[in-house]
Amino acid sequence: MKQGGTTRDRMLASAVTLFRERGVDSTSFADVITHSQAPRGSIYHHFPGGKAQLAEEATRMAGELMSATIAANLEQREPGETLLTIVDGFRRQLLDSDFGASCPVAAAALAGGDFDAARTVAGGAFTSWETVIAAGLERRGLTPDRAASLATTAVATIEGAIMVAKAQRDVQALDRVGAELVRWVHAALAEVA
Image (cartoon, rainbow, N blue to C red; front, top):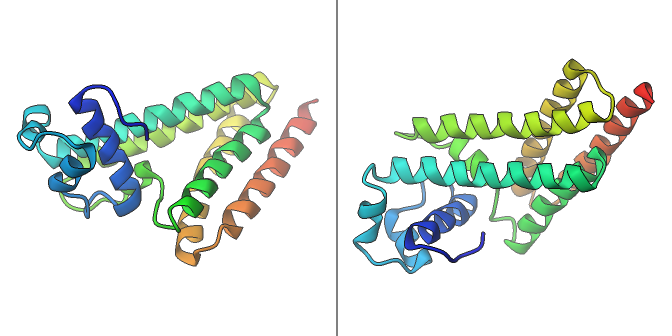
Protein backbone atom coordinates (compact mmCIF):
# COMPACT_ATOMS: atom_id res chain seq x y z
CA MET A 1 0.00 0.00 0.00
CA LYS A 2 1.33 3.44 -0.89
CA GLN A 3 2.77 5.60 1.84
CA GLY A 4 2.18 9.34 1.77
CA GLY A 5 -0.36 11.91 2.83
CA THR A 6 -1.04 12.83 6.42
CA THR A 7 0.43 11.07 9.42
CA ARG A 8 -2.96 9.44 9.98
CA ASP A 9 -3.09 8.21 6.35
CA ARG A 10 0.44 6.80 6.66
CA MET A 11 -0.51 4.96 9.85
CA LEU A 12 -3.59 3.47 8.19
CA ALA A 13 -1.57 2.39 5.12
CA SER A 14 1.06 0.85 7.41
CA ALA A 15 -1.60 -0.96 9.40
CA VAL A 16 -3.04 -2.44 6.17
CA THR A 17 0.42 -3.60 5.09
CA LEU A 18 1.25 -5.07 8.50
CA PHE A 19 -2.15 -6.75 8.89
CA ARG A 20 -1.60 -8.31 5.47
CA GLU A 21 1.83 -9.59 6.53
CA ARG A 22 1.31 -10.44 10.21
CA GLY A 23 -2.39 -10.43 10.92
CA VAL A 24 -4.28 -8.04 13.18
CA ASP A 25 -3.52 -9.85 16.43
CA SER A 26 0.25 -9.89 15.82
CA THR A 27 0.57 -6.22 14.83
CA SER A 28 1.22 -3.76 17.64
CA PHE A 29 0.88 0.00 17.78
CA ALA A 30 4.69 0.16 18.02
CA ASP A 31 4.92 -1.77 14.74
CA VAL A 32 2.59 0.69 13.03
CA ILE A 33 4.49 3.70 14.41
CA THR A 34 7.83 2.29 13.24
CA HIS A 35 6.54 1.26 9.82
CA SER A 36 4.77 4.58 9.17
CA GLN A 37 7.58 6.65 10.71
CA ALA A 38 4.95 8.50 12.73
CA PRO A 39 5.69 10.41 15.93
CA ARG A 40 5.18 8.21 19.00
CA GLY A 41 2.31 10.16 20.53
CA SER A 42 0.37 10.45 17.30
CA ILE A 43 -1.26 7.04 17.33
CA TYR A 44 -3.51 7.76 20.33
CA HIS A 45 -4.16 11.25 18.97
CA HIS A 46 -5.44 9.83 15.67
CA PHE A 47 -6.90 6.59 17.06
CA PRO A 48 -8.25 7.34 20.57
CA GLY A 49 -10.25 4.11 20.39
CA GLY A 50 -6.98 2.19 20.39
CA LYS A 51 -6.02 -0.75 18.24
CA ALA A 52 -9.66 -1.72 17.70
CA GLN A 53 -10.31 1.63 16.00
CA LEU A 54 -7.12 1.33 13.95
CA ALA A 55 -8.09 -2.18 12.82
CA GLU A 56 -11.61 -1.08 11.90
CA GLU A 57 -10.47 1.92 9.88
CA ALA A 58 -7.58 0.12 8.18
CA THR A 59 -9.91 -2.72 7.19
CA ARG A 60 -12.43 -0.22 5.82
CA MET A 61 -9.68 1.47 3.81
CA ALA A 62 -8.41 -1.83 2.36
CA GLY A 63 -11.94 -2.98 1.54
CA GLU A 64 -12.86 0.26 -0.19
CA LEU A 65 -9.64 0.22 -2.20
CA MET A 66 -10.35 -3.30 -3.46
CA SER A 67 -13.97 -2.37 -4.28
CA ALA A 68 -12.75 0.59 -6.33
CA THR A 69 -10.13 -1.57 -8.05
CA ILE A 70 -12.70 -4.20 -8.99
CA ALA A 71 -15.14 -1.56 -10.28
CA ALA A 72 -12.45 0.15 -12.36
CA ASN A 73 -11.37 -3.18 -13.85
CA LEU A 74 -14.94 -4.11 -14.73
CA GLU A 75 -15.28 -0.83 -16.61
CA GLN A 76 -12.31 -1.75 -18.83
CA ARG A 77 -12.37 -5.57 -18.92
CA GLU A 78 -14.84 -8.40 -19.05
CA PRO A 79 -15.65 -10.11 -15.73
CA GLY A 80 -13.42 -13.16 -16.29
CA GLU A 81 -10.43 -10.94 -17.03
CA THR A 82 -11.23 -8.84 -13.96
CA LEU A 83 -11.25 -11.92 -11.74
CA LEU A 84 -7.93 -13.02 -13.25
CA THR A 85 -6.52 -9.56 -12.50
CA ILE A 86 -7.58 -9.91 -8.85
CA VAL A 87 -6.11 -13.41 -8.62
CA ASP A 88 -2.89 -12.23 -10.26
CA GLY A 89 -2.57 -9.36 -7.78
CA PHE A 90 -2.79 -11.73 -4.84
CA ARG A 91 -0.48 -14.18 -6.62
CA ARG A 92 2.21 -11.49 -7.02
CA GLN A 93 1.71 -10.36 -3.44
CA LEU A 94 2.29 -13.87 -2.13
CA LEU A 95 5.38 -14.41 -4.29
CA ASP A 96 6.83 -10.96 -3.49
CA SER A 97 6.42 -11.58 0.24
CA ASP A 98 7.73 -15.17 0.16
CA PHE A 99 4.20 -16.27 1.10
CA GLY A 100 4.11 -13.98 4.13
CA ALA A 101 1.36 -11.67 2.92
CA SER A 102 -2.35 -12.31 2.71
CA CYS A 103 -5.53 -10.30 2.28
CA PRO A 104 -5.77 -7.59 4.97
CA VAL A 105 -9.56 -7.82 4.97
CA ALA A 106 -9.38 -11.57 5.61
CA ALA A 107 -6.88 -10.84 8.39
CA ALA A 108 -9.50 -8.66 10.07
CA ALA A 109 -12.19 -11.28 9.53
CA LEU A 110 -9.99 -13.82 11.32
CA ALA A 111 -8.86 -11.52 14.13
CA GLY A 112 -9.53 -12.64 17.66
CA GLY A 113 -10.12 -10.57 20.75
CA ASP A 114 -11.81 -7.20 20.78
CA PHE A 115 -12.00 -6.64 17.03
CA ASP A 116 -15.74 -7.07 16.49
CA ALA A 117 -16.01 -3.82 14.55
CA ALA A 118 -13.12 -4.78 12.25
CA ARG A 119 -14.74 -8.17 11.62
CA THR A 120 -18.03 -6.42 10.81
CA VAL A 121 -16.23 -4.07 8.42
CA ALA A 122 -14.51 -7.07 6.80
CA GLY A 123 -17.90 -8.69 6.25
CA GLY A 124 -19.14 -5.47 4.68
CA ALA A 125 -16.08 -5.32 2.44
CA PHE A 126 -16.66 -8.85 1.17
CA THR A 127 -20.31 -7.95 0.52
CA SER A 128 -19.22 -4.85 -1.38
CA TRP A 129 -16.87 -6.87 -3.58
CA GLU A 130 -19.65 -9.34 -4.30
CA THR A 131 -22.03 -6.50 -5.16
CA VAL A 132 -19.57 -4.86 -7.55
CA ILE A 133 -18.79 -8.15 -9.31
CA ALA A 134 -22.49 -9.06 -9.50
CA ALA A 135 -23.31 -5.67 -11.02
CA GLY A 136 -20.67 -6.25 -13.69
CA LEU A 137 -22.17 -9.65 -14.47
CA GLU A 138 -25.70 -8.24 -14.57
CA ARG A 139 -24.60 -5.58 -17.07
CA ARG A 140 -23.58 -8.46 -19.32
CA GLY A 141 -26.95 -10.16 -19.10
CA LEU A 142 -26.99 -12.44 -16.06
CA THR A 143 -30.04 -12.38 -13.80
CA PRO A 144 -29.50 -10.73 -10.41
CA ASP A 145 -29.68 -14.09 -8.59
CA ARG A 146 -27.22 -15.82 -10.94
CA ALA A 147 -24.86 -12.84 -10.86
CA ALA A 148 -24.94 -12.68 -7.05
CA SER A 149 -24.32 -16.42 -6.76
CA LEU A 150 -21.35 -16.31 -9.12
CA ALA A 151 -19.94 -13.20 -7.40
CA THR A 152 -20.12 -14.84 -3.96
CA THR A 153 -18.47 -17.95 -5.36
CA ALA A 154 -15.68 -15.84 -6.87
CA VAL A 155 -14.92 -13.90 -3.68
CA ALA A 156 -15.07 -16.97 -1.44
CA THR A 157 -13.00 -19.05 -3.84
CA ILE A 158 -10.29 -16.43 -4.25
CA GLU A 159 -10.06 -15.83 -0.49
CA GLY A 160 -9.86 -19.58 0.15
CA ALA A 161 -7.21 -20.02 -2.55
CA ILE A 162 -5.09 -17.30 -0.93
CA MET A 163 -5.15 -19.21 2.34
CA VAL A 164 -4.34 -22.52 0.65
CA ALA A 165 -1.52 -20.98 -1.41
CA LYS A 166 -0.03 -19.34 1.67
CA ALA A 167 -0.14 -22.56 3.68
CA GLN A 168 1.27 -24.66 0.82
CA ARG A 169 3.82 -21.97 -0.11
CA ASP A 170 2.78 -22.49 -3.72
CA VAL A 171 0.53 -20.38 -5.96
CA GLN A 172 -0.94 -23.41 -7.73
CA ALA A 173 -4.27 -23.04 -5.87
CA LEU A 174 -4.62 -19.45 -7.09
CA ASP A 175 -3.68 -20.41 -10.64
CA ARG A 176 -6.29 -23.17 -10.67
CA VAL A 177 -8.95 -20.96 -9.12
CA GLY A 178 -8.28 -18.19 -11.64
CA ALA A 179 -8.61 -20.56 -14.58
CA GLU A 180 -11.76 -22.17 -13.17
CA LEU A 181 -13.43 -18.84 -12.42
CA VAL A 182 -12.85 -17.71 -16.00
CA ARG A 183 -14.49 -20.92 -17.26
CA TRP A 184 -17.47 -20.43 -14.93
CA VAL A 185 -17.95 -16.81 -15.97
CA HIS A 186 -17.64 -17.59 -19.68
CA ALA A 187 -20.10 -20.50 -19.38
CA ALA A 188 -22.61 -18.36 -17.46
CA LEU A 189 -22.35 -15.52 -19.99
CA ALA A 190 -22.63 -17.95 -22.92
CA GLU A 191 -25.99 -19.11 -21.56
CA VAL A 192 -27.41 -15.59 -21.94
CA ALA A 193 -25.70 -14.64 -25.19
